[in-house]
Image (cartoon, rainbow, N blue to C red; front, side, top):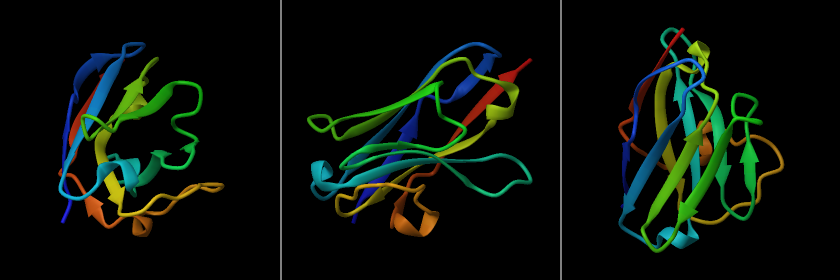
Length: 124
């Protein structure tokens, strides 16, 4: 069983930056595909970024967000720059128990393990 704990959310003004972290425990982290999703109030959860055999970004992240991982720390990061009010959402970390190579955006069902989410609020 894999446990995921996100941190780093908060409130920031438009144009600011935040770095989210997701610490994993259980299993062999280096083998996992890791993803970030987000869900805004009243909207469906959407894909943000994934890091596995490659890095793949969803439309919300392209050009502004950077996903990375530190296998020695069992942690995946999401650096978010040039934040906009429409980035306001709960951000979730997700894990899949094997590596993947993404050529299209993965869906939620691609990931078996999820964190509890961390709130990001961007004010104008």
